[in-house]
Length: 143
Image (cartoon, rainbow, N blue to C red; front, side):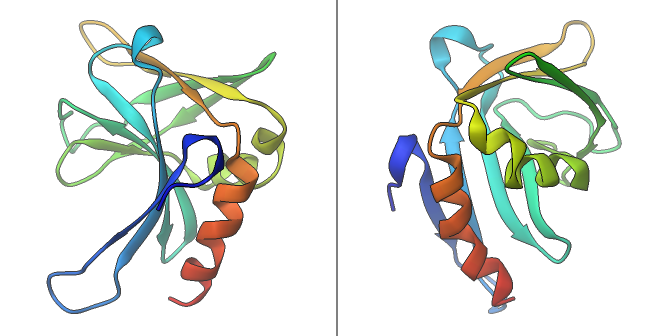
């Protein structure tokens, strides 16, 4: 379901019959991003809402890459984890706290995942993040 600012609310059926996976997603600006970065996702998890960077090319699932996010004039450094498939980088809870408040006041994030031989960089518009967050929250509370 499309939301303001280019966000999409996505529900994915659980093949095992458990609760559906629910997230809000936004694609990166392809003209200003490396090919390997697809977008930003906020999804319900047992820990609350997680911030995830979605990739097109997998990383080692054992990696813990450094991620640098620039939001306006502020820089945030995180140590992330990689999902089982290797195609998403999960940021720590501190990023969720920022997305719930401070990041809702800006319009874009610059993302950089420190990988070798070169970092993966991208820019994603987050205009409409507050509405996307509000749309996702009831699904997470129901889990």
